[in-house]
Every structure is written in structure tokens, then in C-alpha cells.
Length: 298
Image (tube, rainbow, N blue to C red; front, top):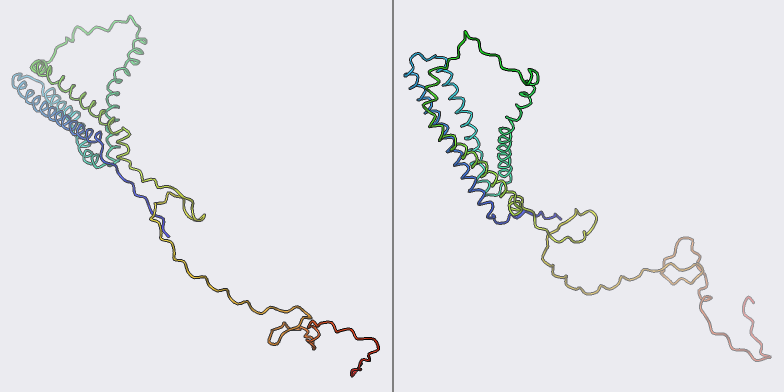
């Protein structure tokens, strides 16, 4: 007899999971917008480098090459994480609707990574303070910086000055928009994580098996319950009582009368005169003076 296996039953999808999925799709859209803005900024800045290099013919080629390299590295540093996070969240949106617990764990990982990144950026400046203080104590708190030599005048590059003066107004718009976009992504992800952590969502992602009432085990070899309820079985029909089997012959006691045909054990002594063991009525009393005939052998 096999023990029935209980199958987990998934409840209907709660509203919190549906809302979290749509918020995740909105987060993907914001991330794609940020990545597109970074790509546009990189292409626009490269065009500014070309234009300023034409306006300043005596620009140092090393400076021009350095600005181009910095532009590409900066675009990759900001755009690639945004694209990876967008693909991460987009790939887990549909499994979330289907109740896949692995997709929910991946969303938790993405939210934790964003939180760690924000904390690292906020604490990076504070980590520099001990080194600055240590450097100040070594040189003395009233120490003045060493003046530049008179024979090496400070001269700013005309190429860099012209390049960054032209895009000051552009940066006044692009930086606030990028900061608001990053903050929006962080808030949306935090909201999604909160909605997916509710108890009703937890029951949807981790369904439990139906609890059947547990009864006593028929014998100790059965595994513990729960056991499913089964339909009642019809009682068996009543049968006629069976006549008892005839009892076999019993072994007579030693010295008792054994009827003919009764089996006896080996070595059993049989009385030669069975009539001796038959009970007889007492003989009537004879009157005095009556002579009794003698029998043979008396």
C-alpha cells in the first residue's frame, strides 16, 4: 500500500504581486532612459571635443586623446550597470507573475546591490577624512602650503577651458535629471521589495501543501502523516455461521474402558474384562438360611 503524496496548491495571485511587477517594469523603463541619456551625452561630448579641437589649433594631442578616453570610460561606467540592471529586472518580471520564488530572490539581490552602492558612494567621502587628518597632524595644523616656484607659472590649457566653458549650461540640466532618475530607480526597487515581502505574497511564492487530518497509524511501520481523507468503504456482507469442526477422539485415561475402534497410544494396557468397569445395581439381600450355589473356580 502506497502513501498518497500531498501536492502544494498555489493560491490566486495577490494584488501586491501584480503591482510590484508593474513597478518593476517602470523601473526598467527608467533605467533604459538613463542608459540612453548616458549614450547621448557621450556622443554629444565627443562632438564637442572635435569642435573645440578645430577652434584651438595648438591644442595638445595628448589632452584631446585623454578627453576622448575619459568620455568613453565614463559612458561605459554609467551605462553598462544601468543596462545590466534593466535586463536583470526585465528578465524576472514575467516569472514574478507566475510565482517563481527564484525570481523574487533575484529581485532581492538587485535591491541589496543598489543599497550597497548608495552606501558606498555616501561613505566614500567619509573614509578620506582620517587620512586628511593624519596628514594634517604630521605636517602641523598651522603649516602653510609650499608656494609654487616663480619660474614655473601656472597656465591653464586653452583647450580644456574652451571645452568645459561651452557645456556649463548643458551640465546644469543633465546632472539634476540624472540624479532624479537614479533616486527614482532606488525608490521603485525598494517599493517592489517591500510588496514582495508581504505575507500574502509569501504564501503565493511558497505555497504549502493541504493539511489533512492526522489519524492513528495502523502499525508502527507506517510513516507519519498527514494522510488524505478517503471515501468510506461499504461494510462487508454478513455470512452464515460455519458449523464447528467435529472433535477428534480423545485419548482415554489409563485403566479406563476403551470402546472398540478407539485408538490408543503404544503401551496402553487394556482391561481384558470390560464388564468389570460397568456400574451394576447392588444385589438384593438373601434371606437367612438360603444356600448359594457354588460357582466354578470358587
